Image (cartoon, rainbow, N blue to C red; front, side, top):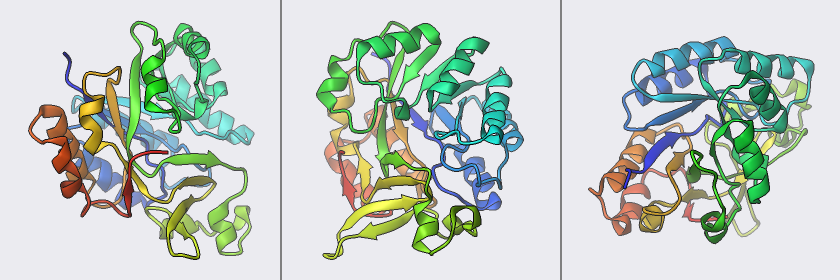
Length: 286
């Protein structure tokens, strides 16, 4: 049986250039097999540009990591499309296609790609079509139940990657909710996302974490973790566990999952290790 691989998902938040580069400088030494790079949420986040991501990809690839370039989820302008074409046109690294325009461009370029979670793949016909188009890995939608994933006929040579840690990305909108929170227009948002490196928590009147605002993306209020369910994942159809970046303690979070994969940590002991590292309340599903 092959050992479970770990991936570091794309950065969903907006951090300073210094914090972003420092984060990936540290990630180069973390025991993850795959690193996803790129802006998937908002085109106004441009402290790290496409060429910067490409340079970073080359640096990380030299350390032995598999590097994947993640595409933006909502393509709203010609400039967004231009960035997508540049991402696909680089030709060296796989692309995570997060909308079907990216799938088409990858297929036309004969570039292997990862079918991202926002493609909403729920049936074997769609997954087979993506495989024929060049998909080598798929990430099920975060709301897909475990039994449905287990029952999905996955084409040969296509890996299954499950979102295993981090706030779940639930929805995208053309409207920026972080800007609205500050009574700002989207086009004059003053880049308020920089003030919320792990998102802006939305709470109920009973002070329960309900959702997290992240620009145009809505996330779960609590932090999803499948660490304590590792025994259910090991030996299943799942090949890769995706860990979504957070600003602090990410290296220690990776280490917990690495120890689980190596058999050096029992799954029932994982929550005790993770609780003090999680930037919010933990939970284990959609």
